[in-house]
Length: 252
Image (tube, rainbow, N blue to C red; front, side, top):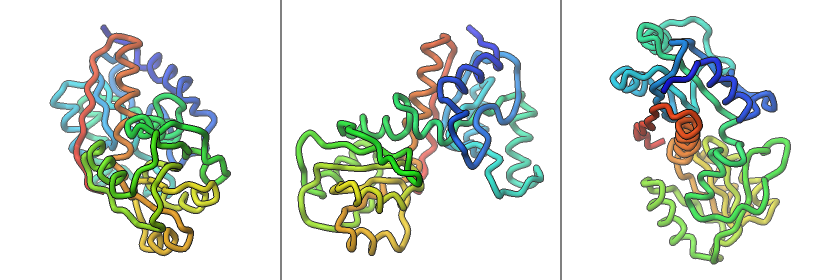
């Protein structure tokens, strides 16, 4: 079965409420390929390696979380960026990308999907102008930080970096996937025992200790696999087209 590209993008734009976000990049269709989509490949980042896999799979469209045309990046289509887009266009493959709308979606978003994967019961949102996307929740039972670190390693298949800010068991958690380590301040304000994100800065260690909150840097890629994977599965269930999630491991 195939689906018109314009119909797919319009439905995704609506489903993810892209109009509600001021983002660092355009959301939706970024490179236009075939007018119909029968085979869809999904992945976290539209790297050359992922594009090459999409070409091998004879994909009509590539759906990602990290696409192109970021605020502040050079405009010319040269070098690495030019080669990526050239490969897409030469093979008539569309590139569709959703950034903040996919982080925040209440069902398929990266934050919701990560919470579900870890068995965290969502109780609210971080709810601040700086951190509107993050979530707050609780573990079924309090556990030592070492056990929670093991859980992250088991579920994400990546050993997290644990920065200890206290010695009490963990029960209340806050999290925001990707490069959102700055949310540790809001998490501490909310009384969380620990904050989880993808990346870490040198200053984060001092912040965790002085705020009295544990921090887990679980990997930008590792924490953001699950939204785009869930979105691709949703597309396949809605329209019956072929889809494949390709996970190209990234230790960052």
